Image (cartoon, rainbow, N blue to C red; front, top):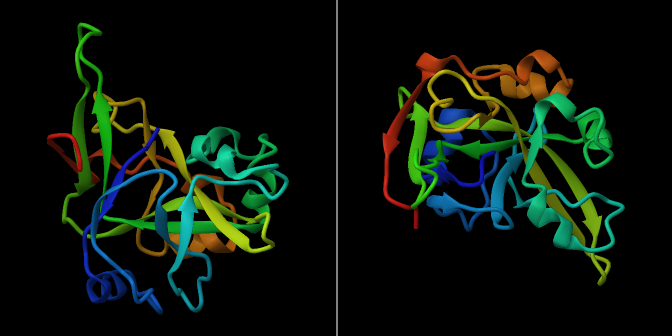
Length: 203
């Protein structure tokens, strides 16, 4: 599971690093992005403009938006089977911008507080999570865009902390993901590509 991540670069830095189009004017670096908050998303591999979406996918058939608070992650292994994700996998794939993510290690004794760790690429550069998105009609008729972050089995760097990790796409992989739902892309990043740091609870 991935329930917190970071995106600490300013708009010009993220645009240049990831070869993006337009960035929302209200862009702000953030160190603790949580479910139900706005996240930066790309859905078009040609224009590559960045949109805001609510983190926590709300299927188009949902009766209310509360379901989204539980659907901020989607398991790569079962996307094609789950009614909540099947249609989005075929037609509405997205990329979620980040430069790090948090996972919590439970205490060995089973008692006490879990220890958070912050994971980044070795070079510190930004990257994109593989995701899915949906449009849900609100009671007032306005469309609400929401997304979920896809997870896979943890690699050797993350596994001692948590059994799952987000699917991280680099190079040309993000644009391949938007063109076709290639299952081989939904795999753990090589363990030596990540670095981790023990941190205090993110604020």
